[in-house]
Length: 359
Ligand code: PEP
Ligand code: MN
Image (cartoon, rainbow, N blue to C red; front, side, top):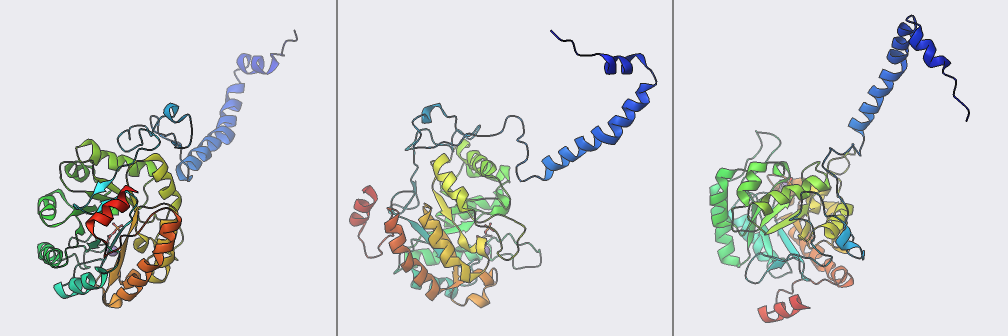
């Protein structure tokens, strides 16, 4: 067997003068290299996972499904078996996550009774099953309109009673939960609060469905772990909402991540809605993104629309007119059919609806 010559090692070990050379070698080459690797990891789009994190994608068509581990720590949000699917009940008649799609429409902010009444009157005859409208608004600027608060909740309650449509509105703080839950059918957690773990834990104690929006720059795993907070604190009625994530391009407000919608449907049993309005930030992009979301398997949409979009007190640029909203919802019909889903036909009776749901 040939022996490797031990000269270089011997040279360094025997010769004390070699220590400065070693030091120079370290400082000049090895340390900068280590620094660059660290920088790369920090700014890379795929940072090194923290130890203990990381997940396995569960492919429902994979015969080895039972062997693949679900997302670590998100054991309640991940599918337990390939066909695992949760259907969340919004009202006696309206469900989310079964064959029928859920379409939610309304303004960014509740502004007045008349505004909400015009929205409800126009949307009720079409396949829109719930109204949206924020009364506690998470605005980037503290000087911007912050929402009508409890007065806005009273408007929502009056519109709900008049139209029979359930309402969805955002809750921003633990202190607001009780009041909002007394008026609304579904509590929205906004993107900026997806990481507000105390709020998520408190929503676990609530007996109403929660619409959890993906954080502005949250990974899929962080999103599911946020859902896990609510589930593990006792509320099984969580609906996920992809609303776009931050990127470098400001042409669109955010990037609608439909890849994550597909992945979420494979990994999690929870229903997934898409909000194309906050993703696009521009009304002319909303209809096509909405159709793409249904085509890729979303369980429904939440879309901002307004009787006078340009005059919206918040998110005016992305609000659809009511006519455009009606056109958009009508255009979803063939896409829904193509992917084995259906829109609620407003004239359908509850008996017809339960037959549809069972299909
Ligand atoms: C909203 O729905 O009006 C809203 C503020 O959404 P997001 O939290 O997704 O920005
Ligand atoms: Mn908005």
